[in-house]
Structures are given as structure tokens and as C-alpha cells.
Image (tube, rainbow, N blue to C red; front, side, top):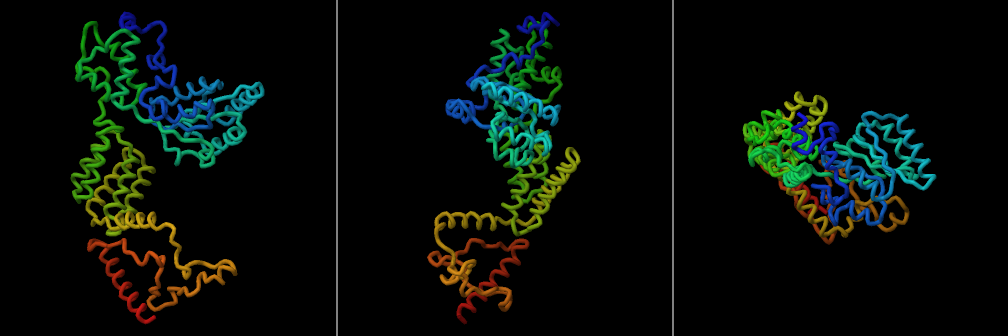
Length: 437
């Protein structure tokens, strides 16, 4: 075994992981996060001023969050302190904060990197607020979960969230090339197997370097592994598609269009492909909610109820039991009557609001909380609909210069047939009562 390590440039006596040996020394060496670390990246711009506020790094594992935090501390001469929310509690935080205060008294700042920060409870997260406020620490938290749901609003208001992307195939390939340069040995893989190795990493830079080490350990001298042998040795199946790249968008597009096309069988097929490929279940749940409001809308208002309930059911049950709720919601959507009338109306109303955003509403429908406003006619002539026949006054609510507009045109499908009849009835009453006036 030691010969195999030596032939690959790995030290069997000091088994330092390849990922650690390849850790970037500068932000420019970080791969796959050019939107943050490139010449015009967000972090690059912050560092030009030699200072930055507290940050939250949100992204998948193996995308460079810890490395970037270390580099930030180095480039700003801050003491780097790292803790994990999995193993730390309030007593540990007090010790870290006390040490940071002592450092600050000597003129030394502290960058506190908190891995898995979403694992802290609300009380623990609140403990960070005073030391962030007074500058005792510059907090850099790392999380794989959506900060909007997992972190306190008070903490988020004091920190900037930066998104780390899963590494694309090109970035993963560059990491492999760096490993080969460092070790002085090419990976013993044919072209197809090399592509499979990239897919096995699933956007995780640390994972691909760990897999590369396994390949070097496992290959016999002079052996070139093909894709089948690679998967047998590594015992890891390549994901069906890369969640960050084309396959991800292709399959969610296919799912959306088969639901819109009222084909429950095809919709279930694409849903199961996404589940089997490891897609984030809550991403799927969010897309199902979007389908409910975009493609079904008021033709079946229950569609929104069903999809949000499916999301809650998955949250409650987890995998794999909760996946059945997503499947049930998918079938419901595909079988529901379809209407994009609310979606179309929303877009039309948005355009009108942008083009006529400065027009005041009629004074009749404005409240008059002060005497001056009453004298100016605010609320004068307003007719309370519940006091009118049929609980409908028919008065004009539109800005005078804009005139009455029509955005929502219900279809003749599902519940919208009732809305169409109701709107037509109100339009008749509106004309009649306008004539009476």
C-alpha cells in the first residue's frame, strides 16, 4: 500500500488529505465561485477596502466556504477562529467571545467562522448579536440550508448572505488537473471513466479529491480503469444528472410542462427521475407550488392548498415517506383544470402599475384621519358596499386619468366558470347603477 501512495506522490506516513494539500492560498485560486472571488466578485470588491462586515456563506458542501473564510482572515490580518455548531454550545461561545475581547484590547480583530451555523438554536444565535454589534468579532457563518428559514432575522439583518454555487464540471475538472500536477501522476482513468468521476463528485470539490485518492490507491500499476470498473471500486453511483447544471433545468422543465399538459403519468415519471437523481425535495415542492398558481390558478384554488400541504407533509415526514406527498400533489396538479388567467392578469397589472405608478387613487376611497384631509374631500362620497343592494355599490375605484382597466379574464374551466358569471353580473349592475346616478 505504501508503494501505491508513493507512486502517486502521497506520503503514507503522513496521510494528509489531498483536499487539504490543495487548499487555495489566495482567493484567485478558488475555483467555481468567480462571482465572489473573481476580479469583479463580491468578496474581491469588499476586500479592496481591507474590511468587511459579518457574512453568511450559503451553499452545498465542498464549495470552498471554509477556505474562503480562512483567506478573508489572512488578507485582512484578522485572527481566524473556527467552531462548529454541531459540537459547540453557549459555554463554548462565551470562551470564544472572551478571547476575542482580549485580542481586541491589544488591537487584534477576530474572524469567527461558524460551520453549520444553522444547527444553533434561536437562543444560541441571539448570543452572537451583541458581539457583532460592538465589533468584538466579524462573524462568518457557513450553512447548507436556506438562511431565510434557518437563521434569526435579527442575525440576518446584521450580516450579508453570499451564495456559493455547486461546482460545475469545468471547475471539478480543474481540481482534478491540479491534483495530477501536485502528485505528478495522471489519474488512471479512460475518458469515459474520467467523466463519470466528475459526475460522482456532484458539484463537491472536496468529494472529487477524496475520490481521486481512492482511485490512486485502488489501481494496480499500469492499470487504466474504465467507467464500470471505477464504479465497482468506488461503490458510488454517478448521479443521474447534475443538480446545478443542464439536467436539473431540463427535468424540472419536463415536469412543469407535463403537469401543464395534464399528463399525470409523464409528470410522475419526471418527478421520480428527479427524486432518484438526488434533487432537493424542497426545491421540487417549491416548483409544484409555482405550478399551482401559474398553470391552475383559480380554475382550482385547492391546488395551492394541496401543494403547500405537500411541502409541509414532506417537512414533517422527511425522506422517503414524505416523497409520496410530492407524488400525490403532482398527480393532483396534472389532473386539475388549467388556467393561467390569474398569472396573465398579474403580469398585465404589474405593467400598468409600473407605467402609471404616480397616479393617485380617487379621493372617495381614501381615509381621512385628520380634519384637514376631511376638508380636502378625502373619503367624501364613498359608498359602503355592505349597505348597498346586493352588497355592491358599482362605484369607480380607478385613478381618473387611467380609467377602468381589465386584467383578469377567467376561463370557462373549473371554478373560473363561476367567477366569470359573477364578474359579468357585477358588470351589469355597474352599468345599471351608473345610469341611475
